[in-house]
Image (cartoon, rainbow, N blue to C red; front, side, top):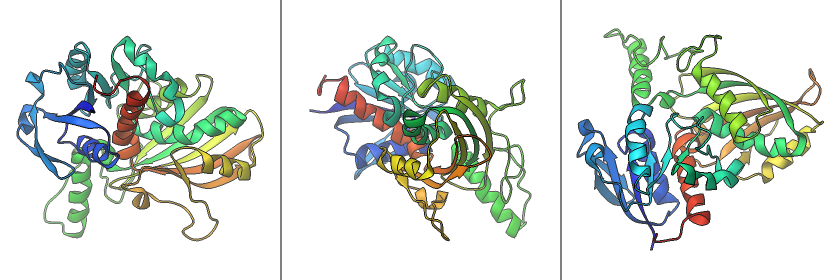
Length: 341
């Protein structure tokens, strides 16, 4: 026997990816329900060779269901996640709502799976921000070896991080530049995204950082070590899928680039592609559809003591969202749940 699983927000980019990954990784599903808002009610989605019809989230009864993977915004999650959790359905939430709640574990399985048991406090587990998830996979094995003091990261985040509207806007603006039939003013983003980069993701805070940047700071501290200092600049780029990050690290101890490369090669969830030649690195186009976090351009930083630079790329719809949620479900099944409960 397997598990009764609910995917909430099944018609969105992340929800569809969750269904795909559950099937690909052969998660033990006995029964699956797909939920959506009323405006998407009746929409068909795929689960392997099966076609599923979405049900109404507002009226769905979570009683008797084992796991619910939430891929909706914070407002909907705030209303429905406690409703599911209160009747014994464990919620794995992709929104930012519970990430900073001390009673809710924030999990990246390759990094802090030991914290999974804390789910019992609220029956909820939080999935981290997409840009954080891929970075901490790379940081953890290096931190274990040499102790990270400080991280300076610049992100190059794809438009799929803003959902379907962001992807549509890049596509329509790109077409309009080559065939200017109509003016395509920015809606999903604050400025034109086609052939441009925008150093602004989420809202601005009083100190001048954006919430996206703040999330990377707070989540890295919660997931790995509160003593790590993090400085982030998050930038939206005209790429459909795949987030990239240029990461500068300062360690407590010296870490040679060759040793770092070997550590990362052995670390779970990481693929090192690092040749000092044309094309000897990974770009977002090449990571799409893959489970791994790709690390390239590993090199010493001689401008600081114990410094290292690296390039980190991952499919943000997978490791940054759907894959990480399914991996959390796998850890739950292995460590916390009895099959058929």
